[in-house]
Length: 439
Length: 166
Image 1 (cartoon, rainbow over the protein chains, first blue to last red):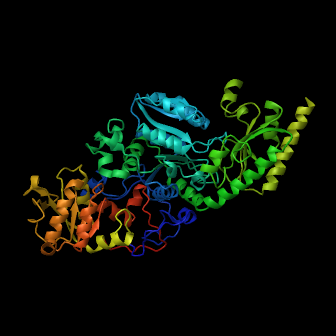
Image 2: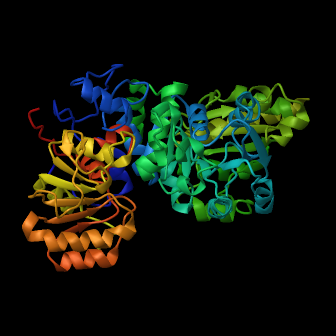
Image 3: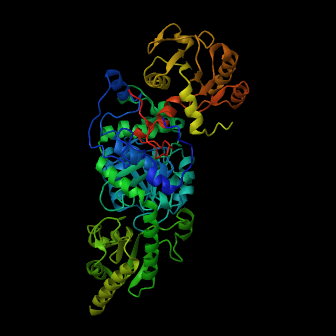
């Protein structure tokens, strides 16, 4: 026991570096070691029994818990203001893990229509195989959200700052709707990061992340996380959430909510979710993501300031039809953005290039510094023309409905010198304009 | 004192000074929270004396079960209340009455158990009080074990922890 440990509320940057990562006590190693091992020795049979019964804290097998991954879990829990975190293999895995604790076959959840395309496919198609259904609803219309909640609805799901449309969710109002219905609000906070927005502060019950993006920050490590606020009272809705509030047959009748109180979700997500779904985060990936977290605040400041400069540049550019960035004057999400994202509006957004599909193609093929690829939240600036890549299998009408029309370019603004990025886009837009003019 | 938020030092002081704990509401069923807590605290070197009138005379985890605080042999420095809040007041008053006879210094009410008036009476009698906490969780939190399961311990330190020889 450290006699110096004090109850203090350290600042975000301090927690970004230190939360979860005390010096390793056996060796004194200051940076978090990579525990590259699968399994852990028991002292004796009774110790093993206590571990398997969840009666003591400790490690059994890295599919469930791993010391390096645990440091990242505590780090993210601290940054988000949550009780605990469960890390997993990817953001997609985080979404399954979050819902797996809540849903039974035949249940449904209400999700925003404006989600990352990969989430829409996962929710709308793959989840059907679990007999889970999703009710996609326009979350800008709170009455529609309220009306979509049915007797077997187990959660509301939205993004704080949606990819890619610059959509900001009214978290406080949505949390109130969810709690009136006795269900949790789940918020994907990937694009905002806890530096810009902490959904739990606004009433969210669970927060999910693709840690692959800004948290790791360098495009190196796949990962996901589910943060539990510890505030949702599962026991008050025992019949609705049997996985948490009724005896668990896989643990001989242990009831997570009763035995673990506000730790129930995170215990369940490790002991049942990761154990049986197996979507574990690799220790190496946890280590790389921890390195990213150390500089999160500094990086997000620059991501946001670069993004704001470039949005203003694009907004004034003659080859640009529109820019979907919440920080621009007149943006429909401006008021919500100022409320929920007061430090900055993120660095992923879309704009429309005049000249449609061919002009869009020309832009992504003419840039030199922007990398043409399908990711966001990298130190490098990234560019994508959804209509010719991620959304190319859709009809033009479907593309437009998804915010991926023929003229749409998605940017993820990185940390390069902002004038270099502006010059690069200016060159590419001029090339696209020249092409349009030539046709 | 404020029972909504405790300093780590206050909780640590209790966990470091106490050796023997009388656990009121101990269960013999392995999947009950009190059984979890008793087993864990035993592993960490505490002696836990189980109290449960329905099981008096039987054994839980190698310890004889006692029917009530008065008949439990002292000394025990801490009373751990594993009963619903409505029973906490009576147990606190009994602890105050038995304070000198049994060497009681701390009344600890489990997660979800609160009785502000009883806490005031105990403090006026010179007892330390913890409410709405679990000693197992607090021990794990302050020794970085809770962190192993992905929880925010709220402990931030750059000091190297001294390991006790096993």
